View 1 (cartoon, rainbow, N blue to C red):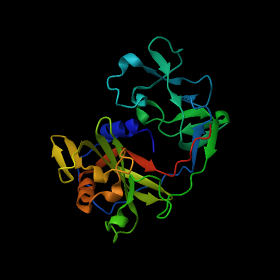
View 2 (view 1 turned 120 degrees about the vertical axis):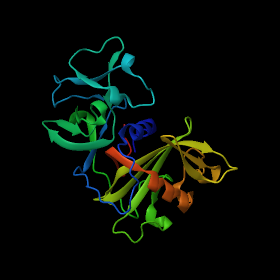
View 3 (view 1 turned 180 degrees about the horizontal axis):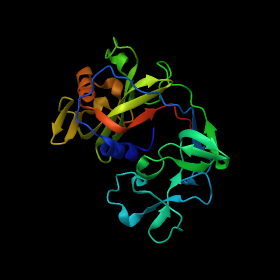
Length: 262
């Protein structure tokens, strides 16, 4: 998946309803089949249209009000040269390719607010077709769980999944809830939680005002202790997460990401 801080902030920024999640639900499978990765780890300029003369994506440090929000939320298109506190945002990937035009790649949601698409030069990218996600070929990591492996949604038509990312420094987790479709897991629901790690308390989920807090103990972490292991979560806690998740303005898509080849 994408960088942890981006996921956490996106979950906060895109929740649009307080309706409880109901299983089963349907999703629309993405039409894209390829992802792009910049050959240079420093990244590439992002253009508004497929041309080196098109406005590029810039950001002004003075207008950043929250540093845990992805910089792309503050990005803007400009033909001006960066100077002072203004600098260019760069594409690194992997990210979905939604179209190609004359040596350029249209990349999904890398423009302002992560709602607009942007363009990068295909010449400086590796283009890869991810292997499909299946029941037996799931994304790597302990933080991904097929709900059917916990006996949840086994009678529904489809495979449902939960993925969670833990920010140990800030004690925050974002959960994404989705359904398998065309080799990808489309997640229209998410839940952002503050975290209390306490080995003396029973794991649970409570709502404190507009924010949920989840209590976990070290037994629910992976063996390295740096992330959560959803396979170790009790069923009642997983069901509570599912019930609390709300619809997101921009659904997340989980796929088998290729490793960058710099």
